[in-house]
Length: 302
Length: 320
Image (tube, rainbow over all chains, first blue to last red; front, top):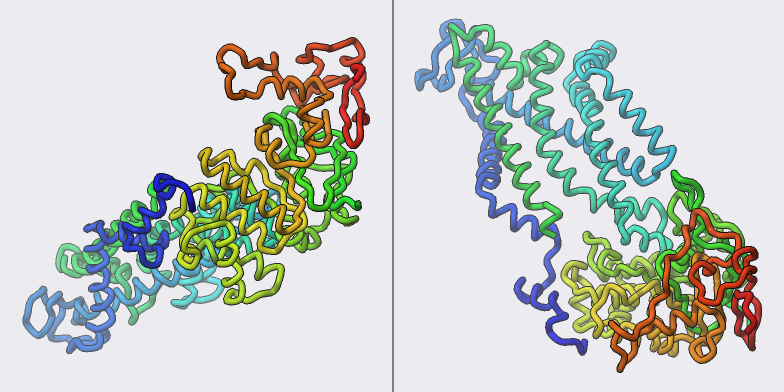
């Protein structure tokens, strides 16, 4: 290149990066994300909650179903390894809280994966196809949207029976609607970009363009939405369990524990305090991570 | 000599809320093997839409009628599969805006390799060597490293050269460059033009250069098509167009070109008026309202593109 150094802005950019392999957009976003303290702290806390939800029930001296008539409604304390106290059946609340964490987090993640897969595919196809196909697909989403969530899930649960997997599918099957709208909107923007036009001009097929040119470029907002959807789905599961439509005894989840604790708020406030605290902290963490990701992936910084 | 591209009676229309807009009307031209055709016109003259129609890239509300053939194969409204075999392979296009022509989420080299994987069935590994070679041809320093770069790590000039390299990977017979230099610095412009010229010479590719810069045309093209309001007003060899322009619009265009030794503020003539509204084209000559030599016939009947010399034609009622 014979032009002056002023024209080689990229040269200096790459030099600043150490001159090695150029960094991808994702890696740059990761660097910005790591500078966000609230988000990084949230990741650590979330990892701790997830890890202890997995490990604690394995090693704790009490099991989730171990009822003990001598230890009914023991307040929190070190006595007898009931750090979070016990419930009306004398079951240890600590092990039940962490076990509930397993269920709640799993449901949050799996329902979000379901919503993600359906929503991204559906939204991207609708937006990319455009015209009548788009209109038809999105009106279908509008119709589903108008059905109240709970109504929809109650129908699913009553028809197919109470089953934890059904809860995943039911929540995921409802929550993909918003995802598909977000993705479709992004797709409309991305579709108009010149790089999509040039992909058409080099003879790539529609599906190749959709997979390699459209979807990677709509993922930024989707990732942010995912971090907000996980806590939403955990909450949805909570109130399904609260209504008795979600997780069934002897399994438990944070939502179920909270609903049971709510009944004994005066006599045994710890029953609601611990699971509610875990749930709230988890919500905060996901939201901080979502904020951090949004800032890190902000297209204005590109 | 059989033409590579033959365009006959091309019409491009767009449906809008206010009615139909005619972007190109009754356009005829051909492109010969190995030649460079300059397509000149102001914004909205239909020069870009003509070639977008050829590539099947019209906006959804646009439609094209007439015929554009590549070696006898009809391109207009061809099935997508058939078009995909030609696009990027025998026919390639370089877009105006190099800055947004590459997807930000893919490495530049991988994106270029797509063309070879798609059309020549190479593996990504095999394509890599060819891509690096092509990057060398367009004189991108350190092509091995640039292969793995992302578009945002490159300057505008580099990206435009990447686009050119990508367009030429399959050795296309026809290369359409839509204002390839408008988004670039003047110094980089010269490099890009030299590159296109070299390509044309070495590979025998037919080049279509869409531009509003007559200077570029003079330096690079063999023939020129002047368009105004979606119509061809003059078509001829570059020498004749510059020395003996036959259409008042071409003459006015040449007069309004700034040159050295001219004070633009004082001596540069402008063409008075505005191009006509494409929704309500006049029945006669589209240039009539701005033409200094307008006569009554001009406003009533549309002039046909008629020969005024060897290979030189114009659309005007005035005596030559």
